[in-house]
Length: 119
Image (cartoon, rainbow, N blue to C red; front, side):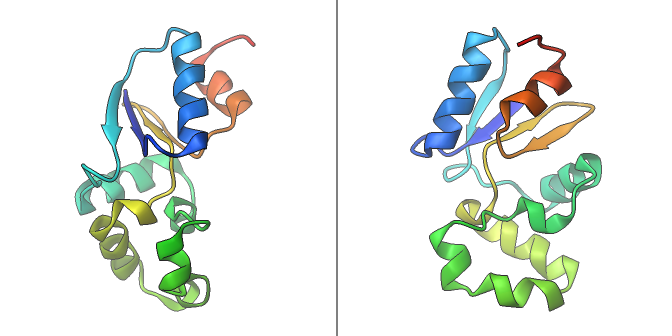
């Protein structure tokens, strides 16, 4: 599994601590140093079952600076993918990517359920 995070993000730190506490093995990937590619984002989006808007870090400075709250609803999907691929700080985190699922954002009960962990 890939654990996609921004190490300075407190939610990512909580998710990492949770994974470690539950003995989940993963490969850590810093979203700022190794931004997801266009093809990765398309693949993860299709496997997640989530709307593409959920892949945006809506609380980030870049999201606000680019006024994406107003622009996203009318923006074509291809343009949204290109935007996400252009800057890792626009991508929602943390993300846990496995062969058969993609979890976006950290909610311990959801992660435990998907990973088959009893809390």
